[in-house]
Image (cartoon, rainbow, N blue to C red; front, side):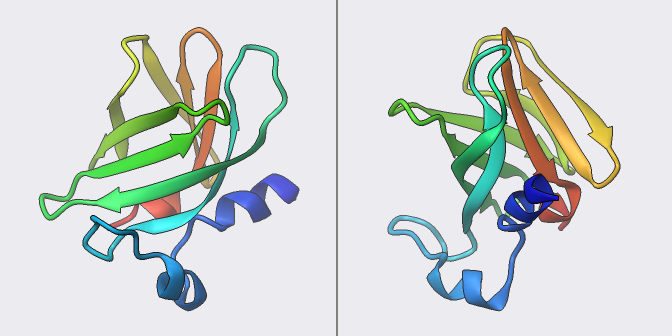
Length: 117
């Protein structure tokens, strides 16, 4: 239940929309957190994230990894296609969540509703 609550933070809400503008963005970015693990075997933790929607319908999810790095995951039509890592990206659907894996051990849980157009 806690993971769902954390993941839900990324969904747009009136309160979130009021504070979600970032310098250099178009005001359509959503700020929040997503469950993530950076290393194989690590438990999921809450990672700061920004969802950036583009006019062409693509989405970039930027996730702070907690070590000063940011992982960007690129979506088209709600499907993760690539990331800022050269490593292999795979994903699976678990109910209302999209679970993204980037080798060797990164894991991200994103609510599918957050990626809906």
